[in-house]
Length: 457
Image (cartoon, rainbow, N blue to C red; front, top):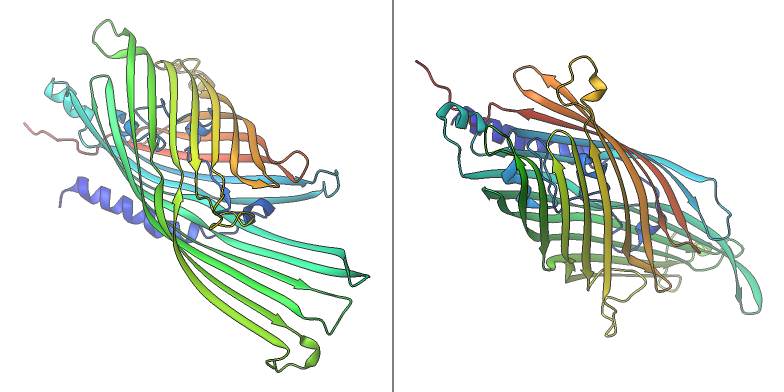
């Protein structure tokens, strides 16, 4: 096997070997993650995330863009990308109480390996520019996260008395995607496809007890489910060239139009439910009179949303980027505990996301001022969520800032450290709101020697 394919398989093996441990670390305490598949995670790498999450029209010779698979055909260097994040969140309800409930969490954000199948250095050596280019990508990243621990002690009216009721809700787990992408570019046009597998497991637990009545019947419920299914998406991008280099036809100023999407992706949902009604006041050995237990396993088909994303981006090479994105999703059969999955009048839930972003590079050739070679990124976004409380959908919005800091590694050419900040809010104004501050740190390691044909005289 050639050294090139050794690199590919070793890279993929590293992704799979480290991901199981890394993604399983403690993440968050988010009450809204109890609903549906949990808190949905933005499917953007940090270079785009700092631009507000632009994905439709973004392509770069050194960075990958998994939102639109058409971008892989524009890679000019093999790239291994890894992202880490930490987040501070503060919870506040509509009455202004509980405003001091805060959490810190962190996790691995993604692992990805991408490469062009034809090394651009060979074009220089052969003095022949290839009209068709081919790029490939392997990625593993989380899709949703569930992590909550909520206890609510309340009082309710029962049989003419005020009864204390203690509710405990706990949940953990999440879902993930592993993807394989391919893209071909020809002149100013590129098209690509992502094929993947959606999987994961979520565990939910609920307990209802009555502290004032030691001989009362207490209720315990577990509702665990696992998911698995094939996913796909396609995308296309086209560059309208405004200016080329004087010595060649290489574009240095252009406008990119991009689009990506898919129909709904079906997956299998296997749900295991167990319930127990128990009276502990009559001894430790349960009797059929004082304990009721039941269980069931339900296996059904469910669907990830059909989506369509479009965007436009103006690029001046090694100087600036300015773009905007808009995405629509249709969650026809989204799993929500507040809406029965079998309800005949189940509503269609549509969501959308809008984003803008700007990147500025002061001087790519600066030799005496490092910060002039740093890419400064700014962005903002607004979106709504398929989950709802009392028929009102959750919303999420925020602003972003980031820096793409170039580093030179031995024999590997230019690589990047992508640092980003995100400040945002998610929830419902009159209910529970979650204000968060996220710090992102990504590494893009580029290698120009993949598929390089060495020549000897």
